[in-house]
Image (tube, rainbow, N blue to C red):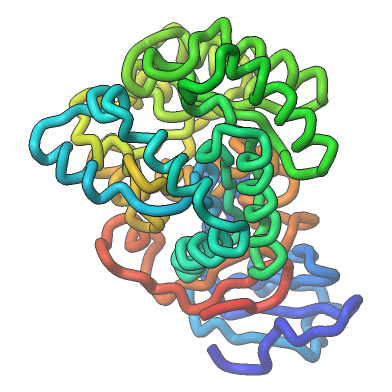
Length: 413
């Protein structure tokens, strides 16, 4: 890009990115909300103008901090709304077991799966976990990601779960990225507890809340994990603390988890391979976003895809995420996630792109802050060296990021 770097502007002064093609993803616009020959003006880390260059107010034309984008595309910064980015070790051996025919349930019941990651995570210090997580986070950021949700869930004891969330918070301090945390102690049941929810999940949640470590509460509702009744206990505590909820639901079977999540006004229900059409409608009525995770579907070689058409028919918002984790989705690419969403689940290009921007923001309760390019929102956007936005979904192993802007500042290229 030509011209002075707009990220150098002082507080209170305006920065301008111009000669750009822009996909705003504004809900009031049609399609991607595309603007040809557009411009974005930023003041105090927020978008002050977005639109056609011919409509640019004179006050921004005089900005000393201008960047000529050379006709490149600008989109909102990407959002990964479901990750397990903080963990120790890897589970490559389980990958080999699956190739030999073992199922997810068989591996879990044999002491593998989540429990093996628990042992590796608990063996590492906070600094060691931070070092490992940074490598994964940096890969996401290099593809234009500006917001990442990170869950606990690989310690299954109070101090270990808090340690994971402290690491997540530190990631947001050492990198220019917005980190959103979720308490996921209800991820698996360690055998040493008689009543794990009473002994760990609930008191740990109170501690995480009092220490300012948690933004939302998650759970894993499945036959190999927690029942709807058990999840209800966790969600009741979350609501008492004023925390929003979300849920891993209907990944391996239909236990009514998505319906339960919707009854609590959940931000999202995630996975959803076995979701019923009726529960898709229940989610839509509650404003609960369907977060689809094609990386796990692909890695586990599942056969039943989420009911995308039922979600469309119901009007349920659809988001996409990496589900980055050591066992079932060792994926750190939202670009690849979009391609999988299209090729494996049959999503359209527009659905994929909106799924990692506008709808992903909704899945985190951040729709007023980020996810679209609209006046007043945080100036989080990505500049791409592409001819059309579909390239971001269509191409494999291709990263055309030219620059990432976070809160009005260029932070990577």
